[in-house]
Length: 559
Image (cartoon, rainbow, N blue to C red; front, side):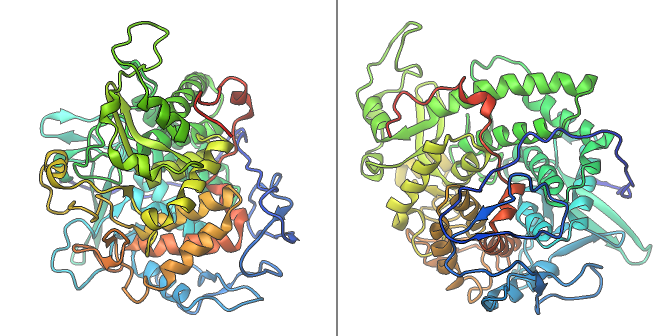
């Protein structure tokens, strides 16, 4: 990686307003006591004025208190507000989690700019776990935003925005101008008393693949910051507006594609090793959809922004139609595919991708409940990846890529297949694992992605926050409570592992780092969000009313 002198953070001001198109209404959440929750930030509350909450423990009021586990000193922040409320004591894990999260803070010229991927000092090989990853920082950022500590998130957004402007080369090939880094590292020189940032845009990654998801997470996090703080000025700055347009220009460019989905290489997202997700992986499509909707709410309607707004609207209509119809699988749709005819040549073809029914794996017939459904992993010509991927399906719910009926069906599936998808540690990154000959072909005999380990059916505690957010949005907080209770039996005792192995997630991963920061942050976000569901607004989008009448439900959908 090339070391380049870091730039200081700039003070920026606002000149225009952002249209507010995505207020989320969760007034219908559940049926127990209605609470008026006072927020300490200028978060837009117009659709959160009355919040109906059903939790395992009742809340009398929302009064943040101090966490005994927080460290003082260099951060310059207040001690974090604990998840404690008047009516009950916080779980002992909460203090330990905040302490671990603060230990992971990374500083550039005295200012916190992110969190390390892991603080496992017992590990002999550091590899790149001592860097700040864009995707890894998202749950950390949400934890700080919920706690009212927005400065670190603002610093991170501005620092990565500056890194976007660097020239990016892999060997002799120049990457697109809008590409965001996968990660960056701060190098401290105590003799010269200087700090330097070294960024990785994929040139040092496994397989040398650039991260497609980094830019999407950056846009999503910018919107979360805006919603949590009420501060419109950051997103309205010329630099942030340009940053969004550069990311959008990369993914909205015209080419040879006949689909509105994004064509991707293996290893371009959270699953950053060869795992057969090349093509049109659900994780990228769901993040793409969410980033487009977030950008739509923040782009200025000036001459440059208006052009992108029009392009976004067209793409959203096409993308939502495509995903809801062709990626969706439920019992009826599975039966339809099972009965498909092949080699159809006309505009009236039912089997539009020429999927051969004999290619349907045996496991999916037993896995699919009568009630329930999910977005499958991938759809491309003559290929459907029927695996279930957690992140893509949770983001589909939060972004409203999934219709309300589809969102409910995804949660039905999780409940019906709890042992397979959750087991003893939430949550399976994908299901099922690939093994034997298929594992050799798909992964290239990857020793890290053996069956039921790591990306190949491993259980990742970080996904707890996404499951919790999806559970709250669909009005099923009991699912989140059950998952959090499971995690609390092991995470602290096991010192916050990166992932767990085995069909049920019983064993600490064979190469899992301890004190994995996003395992810590994912737990904190899940805990705080369940106790105050109004925080969901920063990471959730209501279904677009303008698109409802245009996009029909999947022909296979039955209620």
